[in-house]
Length: 130
Image (tube, rainbow, N blue to C red; front, side, top):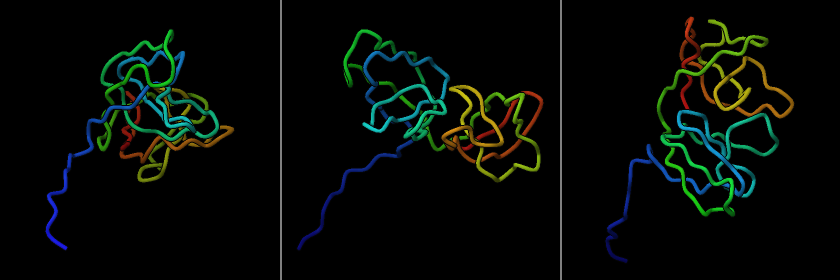
């Protein structure tokens, strides 16, 4: 066996194929559905948070994978704090959960979709490592 020149990339900016009939807004959290296609993050069964959309993509008239959204991950993002199940200082270094594509909560909803790790709470929102 010989040496191999293995391709690599940093994985911070990645392209995710967008689900059919889906509109993704820039700056919102993107999740992959059970089939692996990008959708706006929500408390829906089977979703896995990927990162934050770097652009708006409208695939509302397309099929699965017709369009691709650029998503940033492995960073810390300031997201809105849920008013009902607010993230507090006591939640720093704990998982926080998706309320919607721009909001996190201290507890999981019906499906407990993890948004990421809370790294700080301030009046402007919650710093989440995704």
